[in-house]
Image 1 (tube, rainbow, N blue to C red):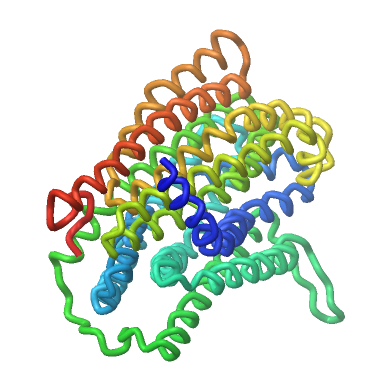
Image 2 (cartoon, rainbow, N blue to C red):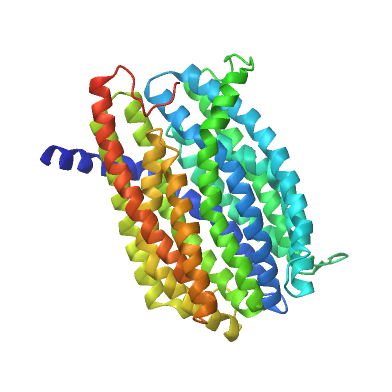
Length: 468
């Protein structure tokens, strides 16, 4: 036990060194949507504009991060290759990841375009669904840049170059906010007069900001390649179909898990839309805040995946185990602090999005429910990242599917409709699902960590590690 304590203590600094820039990056990533929501919340009729953006963003994010989540399978291959000193292997995985990103971009753009027509038939006010569908189609133009950025970022963080990721995402938010101001509202500069594009202006801004982000990551990789000579410029460009299939099949459970997790919030969003624009606007504000706090343990989860994977690549099972437990503890501790903030100042937080008192009143009860599940959300996402670093991409999918859809959603619907709790009832169901997921994933990581050590002793190659 004392040896494990020493291992965990030694991992706190190494995990935080990697995680802190990633936290800044993840919060910056999510803050693009938050800035869009804040900006459209200051347009006329904020309940309408916020509701339209909510429907479009949740539909796009559900599809984009479900499909794009396949690329997160690169975390294991890149980090374990780097940990084993196989830089040529890591470079080959990056090239095939870029190719896979191109294929996924085409698939995702087709899905989102089709979804925009389905959105026009959704049973909400016509003005909301019309604005949402248009927003969705314009946002879809930034899909190739988004998929490329997701891929290039995996390479940078696997090689421990996380500072450029944070800088790129922070500056991308500045770009997005500036473009929002330009495109959303009418402006006149001397002889030049720009008409405001309203809600659609936010979609234009986000698409351009994602293009900027992908360019920043590409420049960072080019810089580090010239500085450290990782061999990326001389690596073989030969296409290996087997490697491409391996990456796709290995990443598919990761994408499916993310889809299961995000789609539950998407389903709740659309159900709340039936209740009217005010509950939906309140839900969008609460969801934005919950998403921001979630990004911190999500970043720690990415650091856990890298650290666990690198340790396994070095054949250091104790270090891998300690890295996973450290990440889980850090994620849970932060979310306890976030919970306290949501309990103490929910009205102040909601007021940052809009001055409309009715929308604020709709958001506050949901922020309090979000406070209740923060701790469990932190545990489940960091445990998932640790499992992914160990090569376990299936457990998270099964746990989230059961916790959210078989338990959380039925409980939420029962509370919302039978007990007349509305949006609060649906969020309470999500809370129940998160509690179950956190317990199951924590237990799974405990068993996986024990299995890693056993496998290194009993077998020449860890059965948790994919063939790299």
